[in-house]
Image (cartoon, rainbow, N blue to C red):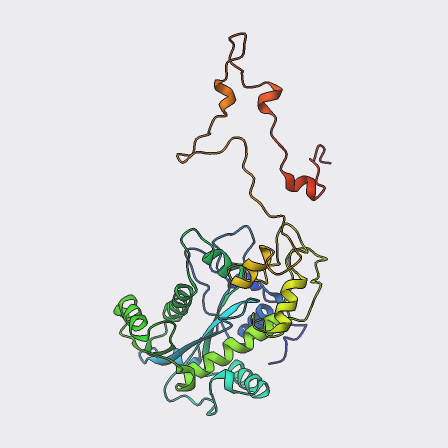
Length: 364
């Protein structure tokens, strides 16, 4: 699908970021859907770095007209992912659905088995189709990292299950009835199916959860194409969020898999070039190769990352811990009092000195 004409209104991809209480709604028509996906794949939209619980974008295409005209009839829906294993870039989940009698391309197959040219052609057909609906959920490396590095890790299988369920809820929330849902399994198929049956028991959906479902069922294959093509486009068009002038030292990262020598070279060349942050948010910090590189294993880059606590920290109840100096009695018998320059002065964090930062004393 060609990029949107410059005369058309620009779609704001931040509208695709879910809120804690609400998933983005279905887009109104196919033209807006294509504007939205062009913006998403070209702008690398992701939550603010300060939003530690922020989810990546979710795009729900317009509902096909024949589905709207037959709301009492259920669609068949397939779900698959791309980019589960790489240490670089996002993981994308996609769903595709249509009415059983709809006319769709006959040569869908697992996207990994298709030639790049064939996969691109099928993605173009999906985007142009007036009978195929689809969903795209992007889990950026930053989202994966902060989830897996929690004190109690939120692992990739759990994220995958939740992303699939998010997409199902988005389709149901748009008023679409789902008859059968085919899913390429993550983890044990029977346990995954039991989980889905329990969560969606009020919606009478028949779940088919199998290994290699993307090579068996057309809707899964279509979802595989959407996920793979979208991820590839986002990586090609990646926008660095670190600073306006940030550029990696090595630009070629190959497939993004740790076993790829080009990826390994990229990881080594770009480790800690933007101290003290280690890597850009293109990297999954929770992956072993990233952890090892930041620890200095096998490389020449020693990270300067460390945690420094204030002299006064909050205790578990939220109150302030008092310095022991408060209870020290001087030789003259008087307790040292707060308000003195000795008591109030705090040690300057080392990172400020290392980066040459100064206090702001005047704001014009």
